[in-house]
Image (cartoon, rainbow, N blue to C red):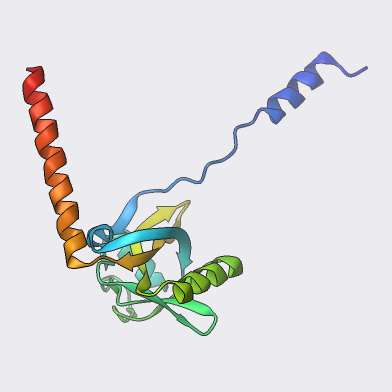
Length: 172
């Protein structure tokens, strides 16, 4: 017969909470991405960076607003993302170089299939963040909005603000 203390320890182990991956601090964000595109699916990808690029991103010298991702062979690469030079580095990187995105093979296949099936779809970076000391990029399969779609979003936002203002005023 096992001792009572052992049973308690086993019960405590069984009740351990699952580790939820945290999305750490945001290092760069694409605010126009959600306005210009309709987000269909999103993925978290690693990114292959040089040492000076990591330091520059942590210092806040990254801009992902104009970025997009394309397939080159079986791999996904991030284009048009500017990571400024890191001044203390002896050898700096090229600011606009192409960077490889790191995803699982099945995710890459699913993304490639979705891009082939849906016309006008593209992959855009939404935000760059730090997760357990590693820089990650939240990318999204997106569908470009037309000008009238954007106007409709603005109209709905204004109507919501007007309603909220009226509700606040009525509660006074």
